[in-house]
Image (cartoon, rainbow, N blue to C red; front, side, top):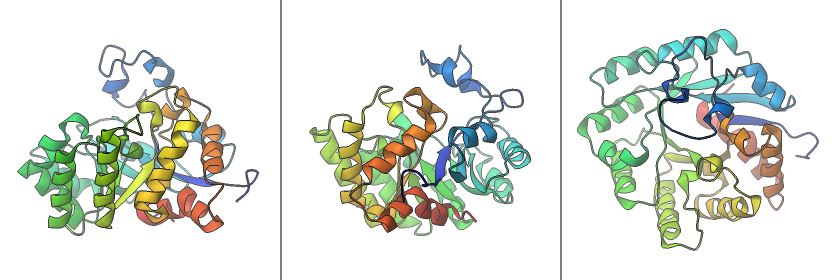
Length: 291
């Protein structure tokens, strides 16, 4: 895999159709109150993504972006109308809703839908110990759908709750987003807890981790910080349970899309070609069932 010829599958992108969807979170008067939100608050379609990749993108996984959280199938309809590359989609779900079961039944019938996301973040422990949420995760697993988990894995309570759910539902598959929100200080006690927690999760063999989203903690993150974080993930969970992802278009706060993937390639210089292929495309292809 050379710098000149490498291609990739991106398992974490967001496309925005602002003229069709709601996108409550992208509006200036609504949270999150990021001072640079206007940079990304514009319609972003597959052709923008393909152009940004300079033709090197061969497929992708679209993560729900708040198109219509009350009727999440509308976002899937939009993707199916507009996308031509091989893709799979992760739909929005409110696992606390009385409609969760019926929404799962509806979404599972869409051919591109392979999983669901309810953003956990600071509510992770409360949600993962809720009987309603646990039932919903189990029902998702029974329908063959995976779950996208986004929360801070340095805390033990939420991870313990997730481990209990994985033990209860051995068919449940969970993708941990954004480098498992790794602590910024790599020599901290929090980072040690983070390493222990991702190790415990990886041992279940039901979890995969995405190396992505560094801009969510620090818009000006540096490769010298990314490299030891990546090395820690490789050493802790192994290449087989890890994949590169972009968080496009939010990644462009930091650098152009293609430059990000070139940086990923530079980080993998010590690895063999098979390991590089796993991180850039094969793991994503297998996990998400991309053709």
